[in-house]
Amino acid sequence: IYEVHYDERYRVKSTKYKLLAFVYKLLTWMRIIGLICRVKKRDILVADTDTMAKIWKKKFKNTQWIPNPLREYPPIREQNESKKVIAVNDNATESGFEHLIDMWERIANKYPEWRLHLYGNGNIEQYKQLVKSKHLSKSIQCYNYPDNLIEIYPKYALYVQANKLDRFGQYLAEAMAYSIPCVAYRVPYGPRELIRDEINGFLIRPNHLMDFSSKLGLLIRNNELRWKMGRQSYSDVHKYELNQVMHEWLRLFDSI
Image (cartoon, rainbow, N blue to C red; front, side, top):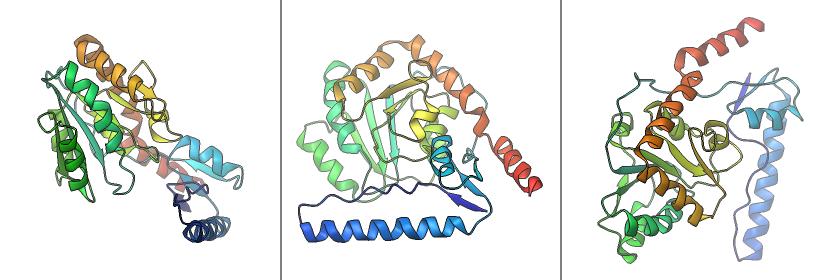
């Protein structure tokens, strides 16, 4: 069994230097060939998103979808009166935080009592400097990735994400398990499979920051809509609960 969390379509790093671009492209193709060779030697391929499984199935028929499990699926919580928004990313090179900071400029002016908290790995200082340059230090706080993320979710009313390279969307699913509605970019994998647009959250076309701030503002203003989408989010991610996912793995093992 071979488990994958990405497909064969790697994104080539962009650079203005032609030689570096050629090297990046060469390394990308080497990774693609190596990945496909490894997969071909296996009996079963398991992908962690349905979309990714469909892509791999074109090259490897015996592909199945088994999602990543939630670390915790708590009892549904009461309506959250918090006025804080959370974003989490552990990818130092592609966090999408700069998009969220740009988007928040519109939110900060209309809803000055609301706060955006960014949790990430890598050089978090660069985002602090960007926040400072936009005079948003009172409205946006940047933190290093926490050790106790599960304990932090209940403090927030909304979750936002502007990462264009997301895979399963683990943080989205975890936030939804805490009855938190989400607003995220409509990228090929995680968000599009987790978020049902206008039902349990909102999906935004990448780079459309006006639309992003508009939908987020709607959730900020409308407590009833926020609570309704939060309850639906909680219900929708039940299939990612640990016992549910382990049942799929056991069924796979029994079938071999």
